[in-house]
Image 1 (cartoon, rainbow, N blue to C red):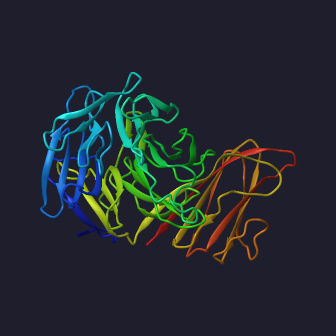
Image 2: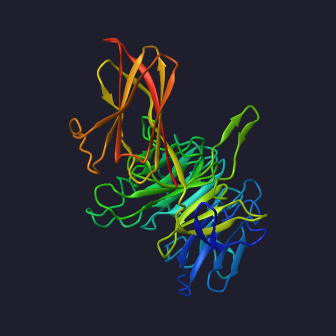
Image 3: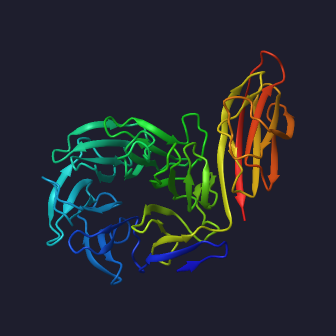
Length: 435
């Protein structure tokens, strides 16, 4: 167990010098009933491995064949037999020649090997569907996300519009319509760009049911997210999506609207003429390549800020100091009538709220911020009990900020142009802080 000065407490599950796992899953091994970490190390060991938590040793490791790309980026254990693919306990992953393979657990021989039906760039991920009939596959360099049937690897669908698609997670527990963790899809897929996105796709056709940021670019902007998973069994779309930020080294839990609910705060990223500059987070975490659920209900993660190693850890306690940001409006066109920016800003649970508004022109804009003390916010009409906390005007090209300490439960931002029949464009950004 370890703790940093900001109150983050975490348990180190795995740390060995010379091992840099990029992906981790926590499973019960069907061959002996023991809890194991299945890990993939594409850049140092170039292998898939199994770590026994009770004995504290790497009990199995197999270097994947090939030489053309860095893999395996993911490696998973088959928890049951899959016809024409592999047996319970076998490991499946992608090799360094862009083939999808199944490694025989006993012999370490390749018992299944298949190629995707296109010219690959980097086959980053192959994730088994819950019914075992297909794989959800990502090609990181060719921007392809596909569902490929087993064993032929013939496509059931392919989409080509996600930039740098990386890891995939299955939304589990979709059995009860009253407590369904899905927002309409079946898999979470990350776009490992800056800024990137987290996308929930449907099994039947690959269409997007939910995404963060949303289509209008509002919500949290993740910095090179490599992985995410859906957490909770809440009603009324109350489930959270846990996201790991590779570039900023943070972990964020996002609500349905893409607003941060809690954060293991990451750092900022600098883009300059020489390229990108990553930095470590205030919690001593850097480049979170993977987040995953542990068997005992904690959030596990993999951080590459180790001494010639990557740490695999599980959160014991969230930090007392947290900071997160999201986009409230992005290049939004506004008119002369007062319009509220959506979604509302939730202040409850945070100590400080900062709202920055930028008028992109060409017209002058008026703005006001209202606070609501009650936890129930009904936005079907004009909110009751709204208190005007701040107001101002912005000429084209100007920016202004509103700050609140010990905030209200909710904030709403209203904007309009000053001249009738005139339009302007506005962006708004929110920073939340506690501790």
